[in-house]
Image 1 (cartoon, helix red, strand yellow):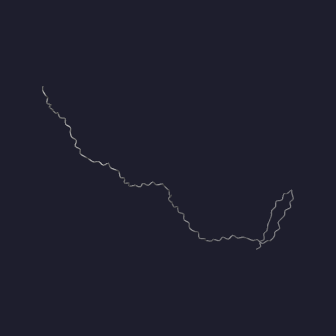
Image 2: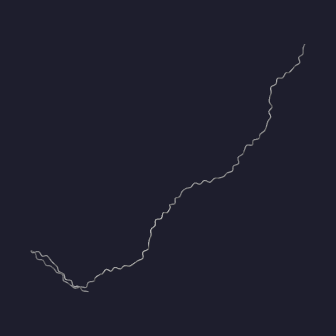
Image 3: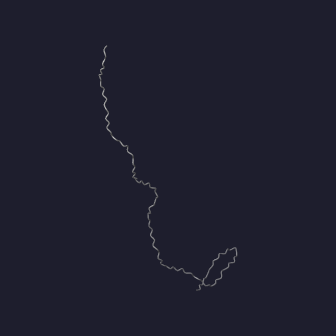
Length: 104
């Protein structure tokens, strides 16, 4: 496609000085134009759902367990035997003794 372009250049020239101005030569040329094309494409997007999950924290604890133990112990028992002892009662008695006496 050919487009003709006319260019007008306004150059300010001071009064006291001469200046040579080069005017560009107009050349016809082919112009390549780019057109932006917008294409809408529908892409399926995976649906992501966030969820906050509370996970219990596991703590290690030392545990002291008590186990009742049954113990049978044989304890020697002193053998006690009762015995009735008859103790005679001591009585004080007055005794009169007679001694024969010879007379001379």
